[in-house]
Image 1 (cartoon, rainbow, N blue to C red):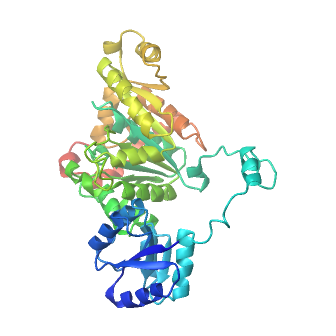
Image 2: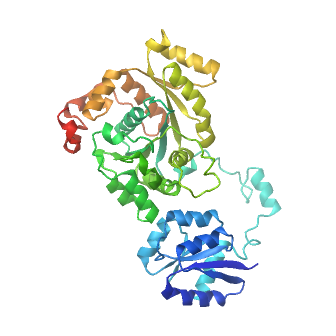
Length: 452
């Protein structure tokens, strides 16, 4: 079988690479692409199985490499130094070659990347398949049970996604206070505002809009310069063990955050913190007009990508007839994207719109008429939330004994139970005088400094 190769390398390396490829048996150089556009076009036409791409090729980024991957083309990097190799590996290129490589090195890398000549060597025998189907390893020993989440097995943090339907059910307030409660258990927490329709975590915590956040991190991920230290610099520490990555300063900048970049950002976030809490937008629909163009930017790709990677999903709905109806109708969209069963939370529960014993009546109605099981309810406590918003702090700081804060603490212990320890309201209340988020006043917008 002949392996078809494209090259997109700098002119000073092109002759050497072409000469080496011509000397290899079973390898055909189908096109020497002078620029990135020609390389993408050739890959889209199905002309190649692999592409040797120079790290110095102008315009190379994560989105382009993702397009090659979607076309079934394996990218092999050509690098001049360790810095270029590091950048390509951050962009997702698994195999690289030195610029002064030999024909034997190219052949070895292509063999590993494409599996040339290894089909028979890697085949599984009938006996091995029978053992695997019987729950045994090939040696005949019982296979150990696999009960751990593969995303956490590698030592990465737990990803908790907070979602809610349209209509302001209080999703962001729940996400902020949920992250604060998780940080109070002693774990490192990163709160990410990934709402591409209306980011607001920065304002809720009194952080400057001008601070770099999700847009800067996504841009660095696209260019291959985002790593854990860079993400840490972009995520200011607002409390020991509690970082915040603010959202888009303008909703019109949503095309800057692509699905591939968001996936890479989440991987690094889980390496940075033990728990990552992400507040996503309400809309999860797939744009039918764009479904035929897999590389076109999609506004809902951030939310969909995050849900697909989640370890736990918290679905927040408002405790009124309109909010409950929106939640019930939108839950199937969440379940279609995420492999996790969402933890349903009903917020703003009050007797004025649900009658006597509102929490009980709401839970019974959703279970009876919509087959939705409600795990947690949060009572209406507008005064406590208003006080927290005015001060740019959390409920545990300004209203540690409020019923809403107590319920959110219960949610935190349920969605991320490992190492979690309950904190008595009195102990948390000791923070109120000092104001754990009080030092944020120095970076609040000017219009707010006179109100806190």
